[in-house]
Image (cartoon, rainbow, N blue to C red; front, top):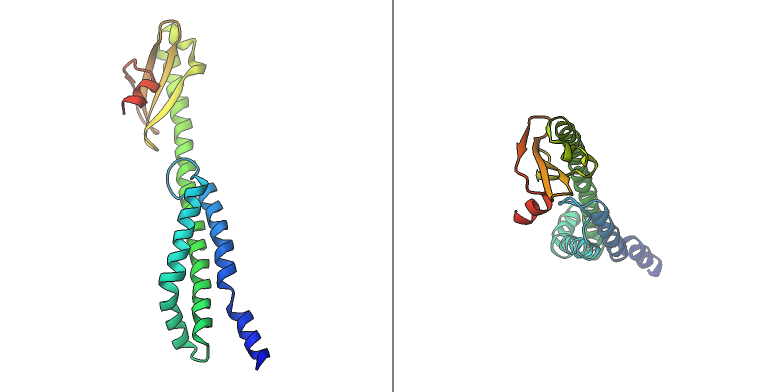
Amino acid sequence: MWAARLRWRLRGAWLAPLAVALTLADALLIHFRPLAGDGRTNLLAALLLAGFLNLVAVAALAPFVGIAWRRARPELPVVVARDRAGVALVLLVSAGLVAAGALHHRVLARDARALADAHARAVAWIGTYAPPPFRRHLALADTVAIVPGSVYRTCAPDPANGRAWCVVVRAYGAVRRDGGMPNAVFEAGR
């Protein structure tokens, strides 16, 4: 009797330690491979999101999946079926976060390549068409995304008079002259 009970307890008590461990792992995953945005997610926010997702999986969904699991295997005790369902759902949450982080990372990498390409084309254009004071300071040119992945604005400053020579670059497309407002002022006005 005790051996059978111990066997069920060992086979059916994985949810609590796994949920804690995967919540911490999911928080680190969300922090280093964010699901949205263009930078890392705050670690506390990542922990809250991971905890919420795992809590929903364990508290809201596991009882129903446990009922379905028990219908498929009626010899399982209710507690064991619910525990196994919770383990499966917590693992599913982690797998979903891995997939979403990988997909978003591809978008970030694509945007970074588009930004580098737009910056290089803008610097070449400014180096060709801008007046000499701006061409001398091409190394100080900065690029900001107006529409990430498709439209960028690059400005070459003239520190002597505080003006800037700016162009708008479409990703893999046209370059056109823009006003002389530096990107810092342009970004503040948006």
